[in-house]
Length: 143
Image (cartoon, rainbow, N blue to C red; front, side, top):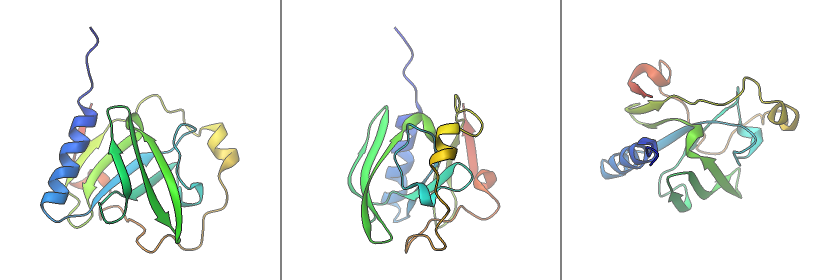
């Protein structure tokens, strides 16, 4: 019997803690060819997403995949993120949360690089910003 990863359970726990505390949960995601996100919001191979109930519709946080609908620049988008690609989940307001090791992603995924358009001059109305001092300032890396 193979060992089941604790990562999806920890992601769901931090998400629940954020919402219970009235905080806004953000996901930092390493983007590759298996990640379905609006590529014009990807910076340095990563995207930060507001996954609060107010910002998402039909949010499903499974053991292998996180999927939901969200608006970017007023346009509804379907988002699909492999749990393995989640680099962190944290509260926007205070940066508290948890960081994860993202393994198996090649440096500079060629398929992503060729498909990534120029970044938009402006992000969505509520473009998430990583906490000051970087993601690791208050986050614990889980392997």
